[in-house]
Amino acid sequence: YWLHSQNDFSGLSQLRETSISGIVKTVKSNERTYYEVSVTNTGKNLAFMVALKLKGKESNREILPSIWNDNYLNLFPGETKTVLLNVNNMDLIETTVIDAKAYNMKTAIILKQ
Image (cartoon, rainbow, N blue to C red):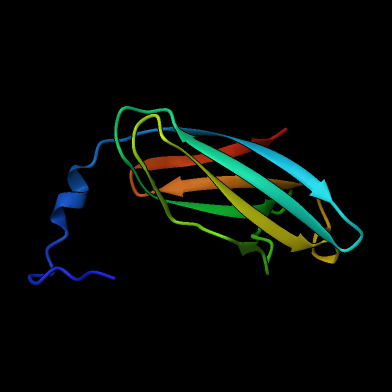
């Protein structure tokens, strides 16, 4: 990973707010549930470090362990990335939602299909 020689990351504060949307496809097997999460930057600015989390809808607690093939995404305007997630069915004790939070946007809920 990279380091800035002067440890000056103040430029990040100049990132303008953006927004994202997403679609989730779900496949259940006997022991695991698999999610295909497609995230699109619908705004006009870079979405920086989009962190995706699987949470309980009622408790708002992150469901762990959840295994993602990628996370903390950087998305250019109009760009879409698809990531995969799987979780043990025994850990799914309530209805789930996937939320996304980036450095320069408010938390968004990504709806399931």
